[in-house]
Amino acid sequence: MAAVKTSSPAANQLFRLGYLMLLGYLLVLTLWKAYDIRLNAIKEYGMVIHEFDPWFNYRATEYLYFNGWQRFCTWFDYKSWYPLGRPVGTTIYPGLQLTAVFLKNHIFTTKSLNDICCLMPAWFGAVASFFVGMIAYESVYSSELRRKKTIMTSALECGVAAAGIMAIVPAHLMRSIGGGFDNESLALSAMTGTYYFWCRSIRDEKSWPIGILTGIMYFYMVAVWGGYIFVLNMVGCHAGFLVLLGRYSTGVYRSYSLFFCLGTSLAIYTLPVVGWTPLKSLEQMGPLVVFLGYQLIEICEIVKRKKGLNRKQAWALRVGLFLGGGLISALLIYLLAPSGYFGPLSARVRGLLVKHTRTGNPLVDSVAEHQPANKSQYFQYLDNVCYVAPIGILMCLYDFSNASTFMVLYAIVSYYFSSKMVRLIILLGPCMSAAGGIALGRTFSWSVYQFVDVSSRIIVDDAKKKSTKKKKKGNASATEGQEQKSGGKITSVVSLVKKLVAGSCFYSIYYYSPQFYSTCVKMSTALSHPSIMFKAQTSK
Image (cartoon, rainbow, N blue to C red):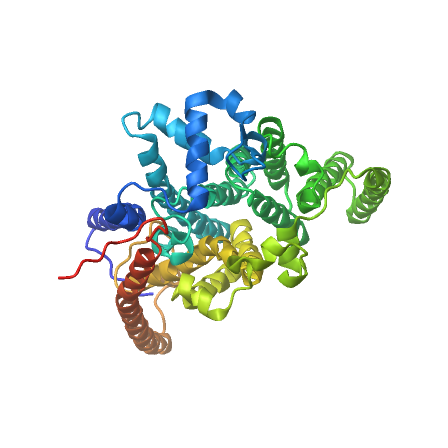
């Protein structure tokens, strides 16, 4: 590949440094835009909380701020669901309120609680964008690390591009507009943070301690939003998928065990609304089964290493151990099921598996955002990302790693559930942004490399190795010289074609990016009209 080389190593390193500074500037600009685009409602209407649910959340935050955690946990709000009232402390996910009070008490002490609650969706919108960029970065970097031989590194470009898409994509804006003090505005940050730390913890055998951060971030996700069940099942499903792919290792076992034990125990111990449901609810049985299965697999691996078992003996041990575990599990289910130990599936989860007219819950059936999504709604909330993201998924399939397999599985699962319920397009947004960022980042990095070498690794190409061997053998014959000349002509033609393709890629990015940004700004403006506020119209 004929990339232009600078005159000296020092100049080459200086150019690479400048390129890295450009990527850093774009990342900072991206995070700023993620914050600024969510302030349209605040700039137009002021520091006003939107809609009914955000107002209830703000009222609960005020009570927590003035009365403390102990009284909040036992608070019965007689004004909510009037005249029945509501035991708020045991029916609310308090992460939203706790975060707002923490920011008020320790960071933004001079701001009013109302202003902090209005600005939190914009702040955490930038945080979620950063984590999505890190997911894309990890997916690409872990793949390149696995190959150990690459022409260039495009992980940084992919991370910046993914963060840029997530910052402004309407699928993220729909629940993170300034003033929309709702659980989802923080939940996406917690969800993407959990996914990133999970992918990072399974990069290699030495990364498993990061599973502690995965468990802590998952615990925060549980505290913030009831959608934590999706996150738990997503990680558990991926852990089981790794076993089927033959990618199980002690590092993966330790990472998943840390994540499950730490996150689940913290949720059970500290959150009244969760209680013992992680060990009782059918919606959360899958990750628990994966956790128990991981313990059996690791026992088999330990015995295999200590006794030096061959392949046949190892499989006999696995089959016997899993049969015994299955019989014990069946006995426990037989004893506990009649007592009502296992909780049923909720109406909303049932609605994801059957038609909404059959859930039996009129409240769920009547809500518009609980209806299946259609093609126009995907393009409304994702726009051109619908065309780019599938390319990124195919790139993940080409460069297989633990993180890239998570991306593929995440895309399949999130698309399925979003097709069943419109509001769950919010779960598809991070995946599509990361996949779109991988496609754009790799395309941009490859296009830049056709003109200038900005790779961060010094790799010796096979062609250079061959030329070195030929020099050692002596002078080439006249026939070989003619072949080299013809090969050089072919190489120059290929290089020209690649540069033309790279130029067209640059033009496409330059042409479509402003259009995408303009569409997102219009969507942000459309979402920035609180129903409790009206504009006065005066005649001229």
